[in-house]
Length: 398
Picture 1: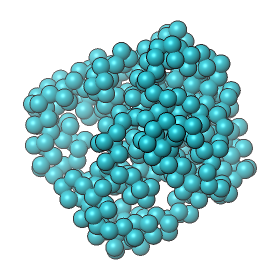
Picture 2 (picture 1 turned 90 degrees about the vertical axis):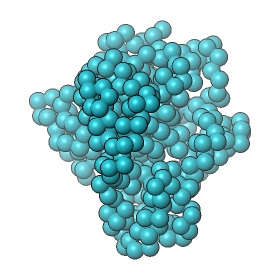
Picture 3 (picture 1 turned 30 degrees about the vertical axis):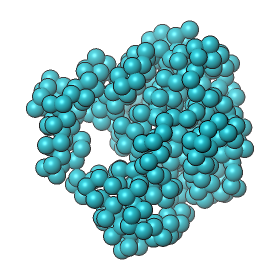
Picture 4 (picture 1 turned 180 degrees about the vertical axis):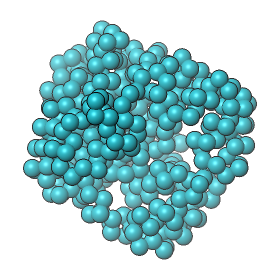
């Protein structure tokens, strides 16, 4: 059985995601495994809707098995997010291909750029460009233009470069998983819909207040899940509801505490963050006090979320992926798990976070972070759930 992996957030799941799964099956995949980000996202913000709802949406729209990307990876830079997603899929030992969307649709060029990014000459040019005070995205493109101009077009595209991060981790792990890309079309990131295609970005869809407004751009099965979530007070997440809590937690932190937050210690950024926290009266004000041309808004938001959740950069320096957590599956997904077991999966696999927490000290710590994030995320819902749901929510079966 040819098994494909997809790394995603699906916040919310829309027609473009369904299209990618369908195209992945067209490439020969008999099973689709999704590594899914949780309640706090790679963009640095709390998720618009629950990971459990997103997992169910994926299963109802073509996926067979949904696994969770642990929080320290899910709320990280593109490189760390890619690391978590690839490690989750690679740990199974039975995934054959990694499918991802890209602007170029050229998997070979993306893999070539991934290899380039590990070369010393590229790294030197990249550091040189960063020293000029430009953003990391601009520095990537400038470095590519200097040492491999034929690949600069890849560095210019956000989804191509994210795909390159996936490929970089495939290379680093010596994974047998082969990259394969689906060319994106329709609306770009953060843009409005292309009516003829029925495609809209997740950023655009999160701007709507009612499920009826986004119905043209999502599969009907997803609309039903979202409508039920609205009725039950389980979405959408409202940042304003947790804003005082975030600011309170950050105001209680010492300056040195911020140096421990991922992506915050470099270049003394933690000094700037601490000073901003002392002044800010709102989250938006805090973001703007920290942001510069060098430090993109997404990085700033990840730092704030990481500080709020108590993430410590030493977690990833001194440990590795401790387990594989199953959020949901169908019968084919169950068959994939059997193949993983037969392939000698090197990590504990379970749908029970409580059981996984017992497997090692690192697993216990990761599980605690996951539970903390769930408990805090619940406070932003119309009807917040109680604490402990990360340990008690049952696996989704479709």
